[in-house]
Picture 1: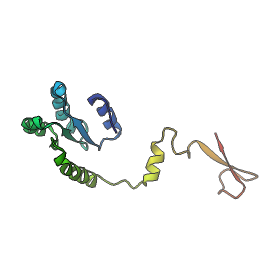
Picture 2: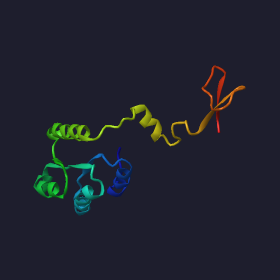
Picture 3: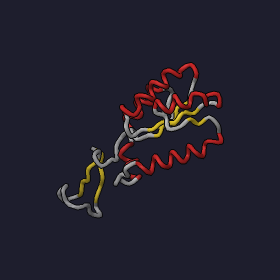
Picture 4: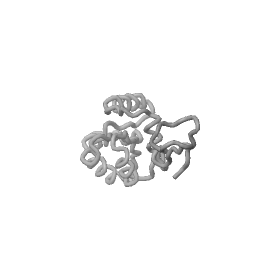
Length: 139
């Protein structure tokens, strides 16, 4: 997911705290980025960040790593390293017992639908199992 700034990214991390964040390094926002990286582990312990920058940023690598970045990707030739970091990050996360379908349905703005609808049957009590003459109505 793309966001327009570090504040927006922090908001998204509140919702998805185990994310891998790619931060684009910008000279005019270097201090802000450094401060944000240094707070990341304290605020979102499961999140990790990599910094994307130009080859000129290589001299800043040690400072960025000290602040909390996993790595500085300063060349397209280092994308394989980034892919490996992402793979390891996802493998180290606890796996949810919820299926991808269930998780996706739960994250929809209107929910899974289960809590918004109820089953009504013709001539049967509502707490009985659904039958062929089942009709579903929105409540």
